[in-house]
Image 1: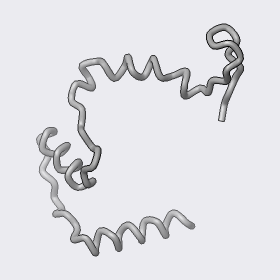
Image 2 (image 1 turned 90 degrees about the vertical axis):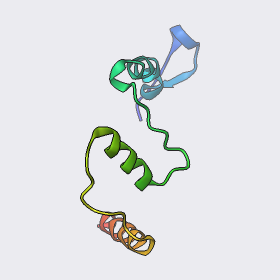
Image 3 (image 1 turned 90 degrees about the horizontal axis):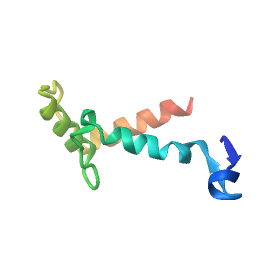
Image 4 (image 1 turned 30 degrees about the vertical axis):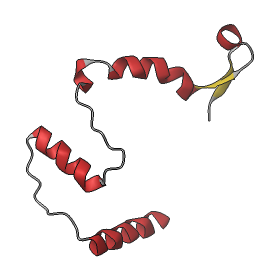
Length: 83
């Protein structure tokens, strides 16, 4: 992780590069390009995907996975990342 001592702006507090980017990123997200925000808190991934597809005018070709197939797929993906 990249850190530096920020003497001028914050005394001796250490700031990471990521913290320094916050003002720039917040300003960029206020642009009209990001006018539509997707509420994801407490929503299953499938709901979010379907919402995005509908608002983008896309038709999803595959149906949702059943709960057991979803867990099986999740396990498979996790195992693949171990290699």
